[in-house]
Each structure stands twice: as C-alpha cells, then as structure tokens.
Length: 389
Image (cartoon, rainbow, N blue to C red; front, side, top):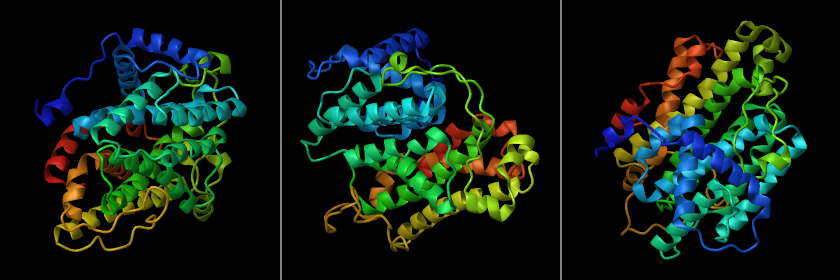
C-alpha cells in the first residue's frame, strides 16, 4: 500500500469501545502487579497496541494520522510514546485534586524505570512501550538507547498543567515546549535509531513551534473547561478517584506578553474573545511559534545549498545530546534529516493551524479552530514527498 493511501485510508478500530473498557479495567489492576512478572505475551502486546490506537484516534487524531510517515520498525514505539503523551495530558482533567494528579505523575515516573528494566506495570501504554524498547534493543544489538532522562522530563513538564500556573514569560513557554514536544521528537529519533546533532536541532525548533501552538489551541478549553468524561490512565484510575467535574478557568499565556498587550485574566474569563488586548497577545505568541518553523525551514534550505544549518544547537552537550566526532563515512547532515523527515511531520499540522488562526484575525476562540483540518493527510503527503515543511 502506498504511503498516500495509508495516510488517507479510513481509520477504524474494531470493537474499540469494548476494548477501551477492558483496558481500563486492566490499568486499574496495576496495584496488584508483582514486582517480577513473566515475559510479555503476544496477546498482551496486541491488546496494548489496540488500546493505544484507540486512545490516539479519540484524543490525538493528528498524531495517529502522521504515524504513517514513521518507519515501520519504529512505529510501535511512536504510537506508545504518543499514547503516553495523551495519558499525561489528560491527568489534570481526570483527577479530583492536585495531590492525586501528583500521584498519577509519580506512577508514570516509577513506570519508566520498570519499563526500561523490561518489567512494565500491567498498564497498556507501559506494556507497548516496553515491548517497543525491547524490540529496539534486539534490532540494534543494544547499541540504541532510549533516554530515561527524556522520558522523565516529559512527565515532569506536565506538573505545571496540574494547577494551570501561568508562564512567567515567553521563554518559559518555549522551555515547556522543548521539554514536551521537542522531547517527543528526540525520543522518536532515538527509536529509528538516529543520533544526529542536525536532526535534533531541527526537531528542537519544530517541537517548540508545536508546543507553543498547542498551548494556543488549548486556551479556550483551559479558560472555559467543560466537564470531562473519565479517561483511561495508568496509576490506578479507580483507587485514585477520577473526577468528571470542571476546573476553574485560567489563561495560559505568558505573563510578560499579557502585560504588554494589556490583557487581564478576569476579563478573558468574562468576555472571552472580546477581552481587550487578547488578539494582540495571541498574535505575539503565534508569531514566536511561526518563527521556529521558519528557522527550521531555513536550516533545511541551508543544508540543501551545501551549507551548515546557520547557527549552533543550544542544547548540544546536555543529557541525551552528546554526539560522537563526525564520521566522514556516515550519512551527511542532509541525508540524516531526510531519513528522519517523518519525525518532523507535526510541523505540517502546526503550520496549517497557524494559517487558519491568521485567517480568523487571531481570534483563538473561533470554533473552526477547534476542528481537525481535513487537509492534513494531503498536505503531509506532499510535504513528505518533497521533504519540505
């Protein structure tokens, strides 16, 4: 099947609802998981795969759509990782208190250690992630590694969303995006496997654009939260008490941008899109996201012109970003980026949404902006073919 047909085919999950309920019962039973368990069975792995697909098709359809561009040997890891991201992002809406939210995050921190040790808790996302990492180690004879630091960073970054604390400035928002969406891309690159300063550098800018845009997209939902249905999570859903009530509204924009634009949170919570200065603040934040996409585009243009990317990678030398000396026998930076291009595809959906936001004069409350963009499969297919973001 061609990649275009794969991207555009209808996404169906057989008996998804029944499996969803069964998997939720399994995740509630995690407290009884023994400290040492038997190797994962094929039935467990297949069940976990169905669960993760159901989770993504319900809560993160774009990531599921874009999974077609991930090389087949790394796709299971990608699906499990994105399912983990969904599970983490839903914790604030499905827990009854801040303390319980922290307990759920701690469950996932503990689960990461068990997953990397090959002894995952009896939770579908953890099972699939452990299986994919085990396959990666076998495929690469232990040479490829998934960074525990990156996985725990992804979890820790979600603590801020438990209380909807505002970002002090736009740099803090960029840091959140780096620790979440850029880190998701670093981990996916590791599963290819690929260790490349250039690929990581491109992923950093795209991840920041995606993360900043995600905060803008979620602004109406955080400002005016609706009661949420219970959703599956690792960490003992029943015993920890999920809540379907709504949280107090908040405006998750950087405080420095709000101050500069004259935006007051209470006015946004009262007037919504009509709050003074809100569109100016949204414009400023959206421009920063767009700047990161433009930077990534320029980096690719420089590589195709036979030049270097144009500026240093600010995270080089940090944990997970240590690189061996260049090997002239290896792929060129451009070859590495082209081989990793499927990982960068979230840039396409982000650009489409930012363009729609501009069309609606930066009114982030427009209902059209909450809908999925039907053009994503087509646009993504051509971007992948042309290796352009």
